[in-house]
Image (cartoon, rainbow, N blue to C red; front, side, top):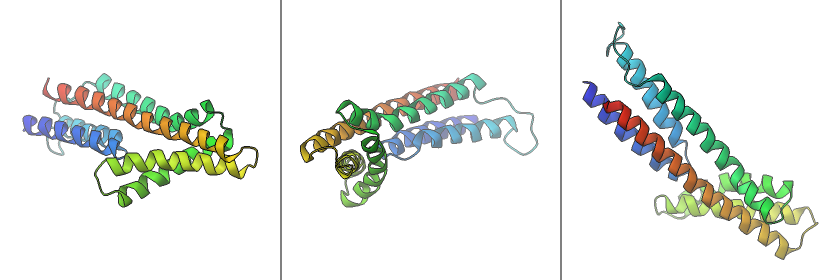
Length: 179
């Protein structure tokens, strides 16, 4: 039965990577599944208890730490891209909000799996930064467009980096599930 649980961990970890590419909380899905497997294995596969650990506790802790790092990188990357392009705090806020709405819109408007979400998130971050920079009245359309492009690039890079973190977590959980 432990092999079946380990195979399930591999599957759910890979699903977590795919969900991350869709800008969904795939990392946390994988960690939650690993935590449930840990609980199940320690209970002996039943409610009674007395079983062995599926994962070393440091492995789960490391995955949580990596997940937190990935979230922080994703949260601030589009804002950092906007700031690097000369944006203000207003543009940074617009990039974060626009990225969230853009990911949702892209998922439905561009029906190509993963691509629609990624393009939507980047475009939304750029548009959000552009609009809020321009709404402040201190930047021209050209300057606001540069800020928006920086925010879009930051968001795209952040999603790719976060998917890398998700892949690392999937590898760690998958290997430890079989050891």
